[in-house]
Amino acid sequence: MEIVATLSPGAQLKLNDFNLSGWPRDNPLPDAPAKLRQLTLNNLILNYEPPAEPFDLLCLFDLDELVMEGTYINKDLYSFIGPPAQASTMQPIVRSVRVTCMDHLAVSTVMNGGFDQGHLRTLRLCPKFYSSFNLAEAMLRGHHDCLRGVELVTTWVAGRMRDWGPGDIGLITALSSCVHLRTLTLSWSHFSDPYQMLLASEQNGSAEDADNCVLFRLILAATPRTLRKLIFSLPRVRTQDALNHILCHLLPRIKQAIEVLPELQIIRLSFERDFSGAAATEIIRRILPPNILAGTMLQVADS
Image (cartoon, rainbow, N blue to C red; front, side, top):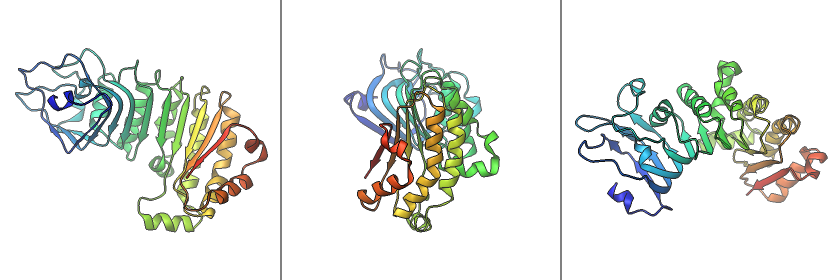
């Protein structure tokens, strides 16, 4: 914490491959949390061992953004339900949380009451495996009353929906409990391997586009009617045919959003492309109906 004390409130701190064994018994916890713009935890291992005591790491900070890229509790996770020995009197102060896949510290935080409801406003969730789907659902349900913005990276969820069926995706119903939601971002990608991504684009897209748009139908049906901004963050578009393919799948979801979300003000299409902006504009004008293009609701952010 001596290093943290030297940082300005606008600083970003990343703890990478860090092993945290506990807090020394003879050292009091800081009187006030350290303010940071961003804290990133990557491959952080919480390995609490005597004589050190467990403590709430996140309560040491007052954060604008927390990025959890993989933290691990080196013990039975579900025995870590009760408050740690040096428990803080307040929940972690974080305004925006981004969780990638499964994160033990995120699970522990949810089990111990979650983040401070007076500060948390946005969640970005990227579940990949079944356990991380449960975590995403728990984070939405545990903070349903304070969330104003949610981003769901649905690439893996959509693929697994074919095997499990929509009834097994609890995060969809959890989203419906976020009654004060104002902004929803739905984001998906194709492949991490560049060759496979290029091949998929050359084949007018991939099954991921269709799968994700099927999932979006279920999500939009459960989305709180308070929503004002809907953002579709598309995969990187490498060919004009690929954009055409994606928009053909997405058009029914755009129409659905307009029909079922009475307070919706903005629909934004966000994507990167490997061809000219003029060509992208022409494709959008060809596929989307005039009543959508003529209004002020649709926004396109491409580069």
